[in-house]
Structures are given as structure tokens and as C-alpha cells.
Image (cartoon, one colour):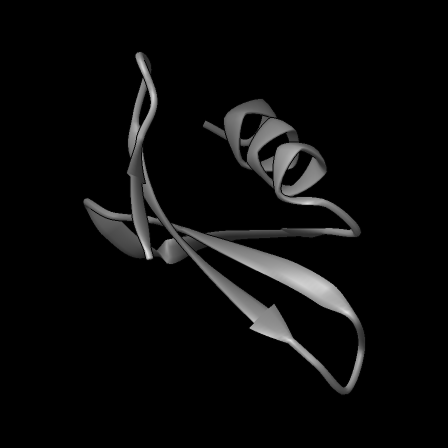
Length: 49
């Protein structure tokens, strides 16, 4: 799934083995963050931006 935030566009996947959401910056696939919720993963992605 691809989402559009006011600050960035990102893609979300769910790792069912680890029960973690993985968020990828749509413009830079190497820019990645994880979290137990989508919101937490997006917050982590924004911190590294």
C-alpha cells in the first residue's frame, strides 16, 4: 500500500514473522523504518529524514 502524508509519500508492508510494519520512503527505497504500528513506523521514518 502507498500512503500520502502531508510531508512524504511512503509504502507500508507487514512482516508477519516479526509482527512489524515496515515503511519505505516512496522516493528513496533505501530510507526504511519499522514499528509495531504504522504510525510508529512513520514517526521513525520522519525522524531519520
